[in-house]
Image (tube, rainbow, N blue to C red; front, side):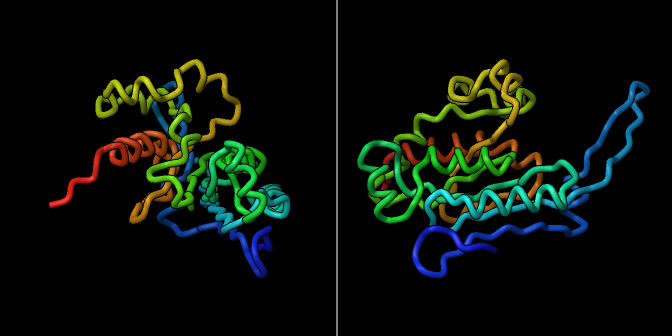
Length: 212
């Protein structure tokens, strides 16, 4: 854990989860030309949680140091980062005053720490649903996931980034947003599915609340 820029004694957290089950599910399976396969050495699932904070250089440096020392080329598996405010003029000003982060600042930290996936959370109750900046995000999905039969809705096809964008993106950051009660498996395939989950959340929040 490390101190971040918020109130007194605020901390971020970086955990390397090395349970047999999680490491098995995050192993690399490689196939050769004869359709035989072998499994690379399994690696831990690294989860980083920002806590409430301004963009933190301490957090970035800690993640970079741990990855260099322990991960043998692997990255932060999931960054859970607060994105309290939108990136409009008012949101940027209040983020500084109240020591929180905006949506774009959170995504910038994800890029700096080399995260494979980023789950945004802790949105201000000023926004009845989601910050407008999140509403307008073009979500990056792997082509194999978009092409699945279960993902054939026109909403998903129109809102996820196109195949060429995925292939040209050297970092491949998958973005989602958290809501109360959400449970996300700590696996590589679940991280890649975060954009599809995000679209489902947007659809649910766009429906008017029906009271019995």
